[in-house]
Image 1: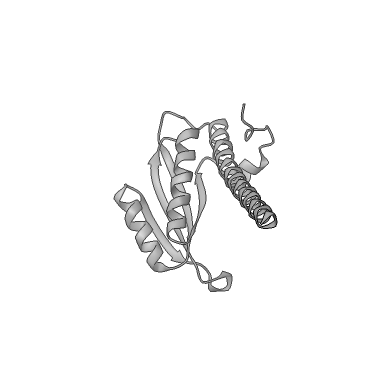
Image 2: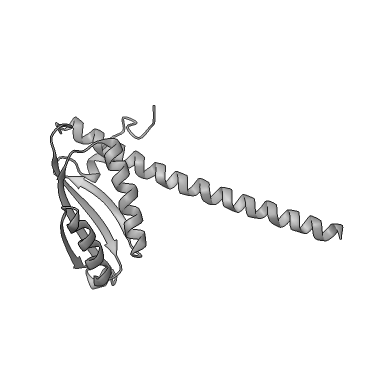
Length: 153
């Protein structure tokens, strides 16, 4: 009887540990995306981007098929985004890439919220949100930024 109780407690402890690891990993992934958004916004400002004026923002999705693209495109189109999609080079896989464009103000909290929302939207359609960029900042420029922009203060 005691060995069954011990085993049950051991299994419960293992389950709690697994849940804690899952929650921690998920939180770290979210923080990494938020830090990336913060870094891109900082670089845009450094390169002369005006936080009070809208700019053209490009958003990118990796989706599994044309049907998923059509559904995401319809949702984004209804919200004022210009959307196009195409099949990825067949040598790189049987997937589609979707591009959405919208003129909007760029702020750290706003872009972090968009990243969370678009990541969830992509996941609902078995895809992945690949992030955003503007004409004023590229991902390469954000990688070159070694000023610690991704660190919270």
